[in-house]
Amino acid sequence: MKRSFDQELWDFQRELKSGKLQCTACPRLCQLIDNEVGWCGARVRRGIKVEPRTYGLIHGRLAEDPIEKKPLYHFYPGKKILSFGSYGCNLGCLHCQNWHISMQKEKSDISKLIKISPEEIVNECLARKMTLIASTYNEPMIAFEYVRDIANLAHDHNIKMVVVDNGYITRKLAEALASHIDAANIDIKGFSSEFYKEICGSPSWKPVLRTCEIFYKHGVHLELTNLVIPTKNDSDSMIREMCEWISENLSPLIPLHFSAFRPDYKLNSLPHTPIKTLEKAIRIANDVGLKYVYIGNVSGHKGNHTYCHNCEKLIIKRERYNTSVINLRGASCSSCGTKLPIIVANE
Image (cartoon, rainbow, N blue to C red; front, top):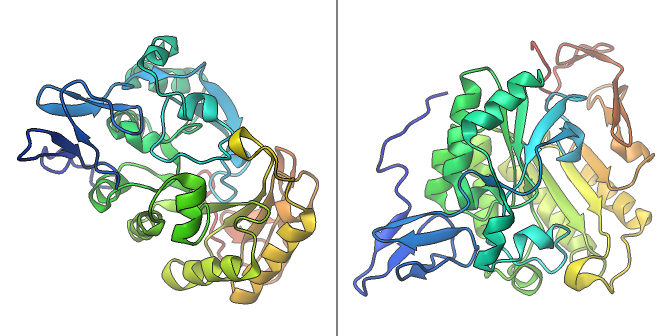
């Protein structure tokens, strides 16, 4: 892939007549005076520049996660991925399970983070003999410079860069980053402006869909997650509309993960998602024509497994985070020979 460092391409600010600087990394378009921190808690104006105050800072230690935890089911299945998160988010989801790092935006919290450079992350990945790195746990794109720099160093060593992302960024940033990352799981949290306003504190979900389209168009391996929240985004009509959009604007072969909601943060009075609701969501998605639809946060369910979309043979079996590749030759079904939308080592 061509990876550009053109200064204009990576300029995500605009000077306003008022003297404020406008951050153009995400659709919030925060207008900042000197030393003011943006809505996300991660970007700050310093003099004539808007920059991430979390560059080179992570929360906790580097973790070795199963790649299925991201979740990515069709990207190096069964492999471990070196994972890190930082601080802040540009959405305000009422159900956020990582609210302690995404929603705590006081400046003093920065002192709790651990310093680690892009070089150190890549070197640690090499030392552990791993080939995958993920920016996850909080929103990666609010410190996109950090993600970009890690990705480019990683690619020099044939290490893949993954982001677990809310997709709520500007077109320009999506276009710029698409050539620097290898895979993404984007969370389509609901399928209406009303849902995003009420639950996520955002006026629209359209930028999320645009990011999905841009990443897919640029060849980023893309998987999608929809956390199904009882009474909020679990209607048949909303699920069907989302699945139709995926089929028509991306591909019927895009993996879609319907994950079970667990009460957390400010939505802790709602019930867990019934398994029957998730199973109905899968039926709706299949009816629309989506071929790879999964159930998440429910271990031991057949909806965790991958089946060939042509002959329906079991391809990959998953029990919690134990993954068994059963019926795969390269990236093809070993029963019928159909090429599958799965990226494997040495493909």
